[in-house]
Image: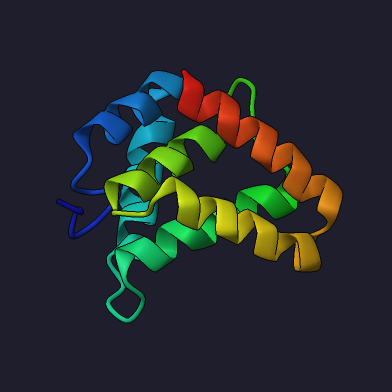
Length: 113
């Protein structure tokens, strides 16, 4: 079942953020939690938006990159792999084919682990 707030309701995510740095974790939880609590855009759409931002910025794999956490967040909100893949195809047009190609590779690595 999707969370009402993908940040504030996900204790696993909050613990992962605190492992990066306790103050950082608390700060991100408060600020992002407030943004995710805004009422007009649903949680599933917000999860797809953050994946889009990661693709555009190429924040895909490696220490401190958020793509895996955002994919996990999206799946917890009911997004399917097929929907993420369709999003990546759509982003080929607007973000670039190379960025989408790298994202498909990262997605495979994340969902295979």
